[in-house]
Amino acid sequence: MAETVVGTSLQVEGELKSQGDIRIEGGVSGSIETEGSVTIGAGAIVKASIKASNIDIAGTVEGDISTQGHIALSDSASVNGNLQCTELTIARGAKFNGGSSMGKQESTQEEVVVPDNVQATADV
Amino acid sequence: MYYYIYDTFLEEKRFARFVNEVEAQINALGLTGERTQASSLRSVGTVTKDAIERNRQPIVIVGSDASLSQAIDQACRMQTDVALAYIPVDDASFLARALGVTASTGVTALSRRVVLNIRAARVNEYFFVGQVRCSRLVENRGLRLRRKNALTRFKMTARIDDALHIHGEVLGCHVLNQPQEALLKLDFLEQDRGRRQKQHAPSSSFSSPALELTSKTPFETNVDGRRVVRSPLIITTTKVHVPLIVGRDRLFS
Image (cartoon, rainbow over all chains, first blue to last red; front, side, top):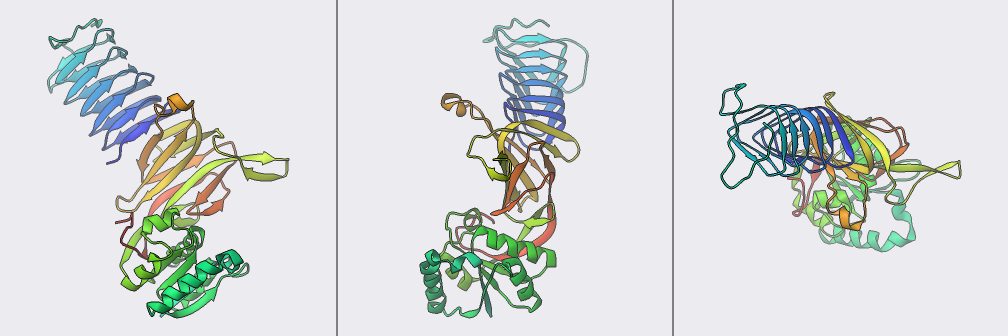
């Protein structure tokens, strides 16, 4: 399945659904759902719920994020929303406001696991 | 019996050598047949329609992508089983590459007769198998419209499956028919932000079986070599297949 790309000049509104990977460098509002991975670039602004296999964030996201795999927030990431995943990585400098749950079942319990080699300064 | 349709422009002197070479190959391979010349009064599409009605096959289009696309449009409208073949004047044209034929291998492909049933797509009232390209039109001296040189930006909106609205300022877009997947691949060509940043400015890409393209700015649409000026563009995949004789190095599979 071809990769879906939202470039820097574009704004997308609505349900962005795909079976392949999605890369976002522009703006998206609504919802994002894919069987593949989602990569959100440093300049991207996303106001949407996200469901994907793995999610890498370097830009700004407002919305709940859910995955069976990992979520990675790089140093330029800014996330306002709840995270659900099996693995979470937060780089130093990333901004995170919201709850997080690890594992398959949905929960409001807040828990963040930061790998030993990563320094987290997230606001949880 | 082979039915050759030569497009009007091949009557020009500068194409005499090309026509002679094609005819020499046709004779050498023993693929001679009926020959018709399209004219300003009888387009390739009209001649193709007549040929299909008279059950001539295969129909061989000698000309450009625009010539073949007229024949494909007609064949799809009539939903015929008559195979179409292509001998392109431009080896590098999109349909020539997609079908894997050149001026010389087009005749060889004809003798091999490998036929692929290619699923057509539709843009407004036209069927096509290759691609739709959109670029901006600007008013010139208040009377005529002509395509401005590259890098002219305009605002464009795409609607996909009624669920997704995409808008932004772009240089243009391509919609590529992907017959194997029954999908359309929409690629936006985005603004050039300078040589250094250009490589970091990705174009956008979406896949869908149906989409609509609009803009408040007049823009030109090129459907497999044929120019059309009309908006909105409603582009969909179809269940109509067109039998096309293809060469070995084709992009379609």
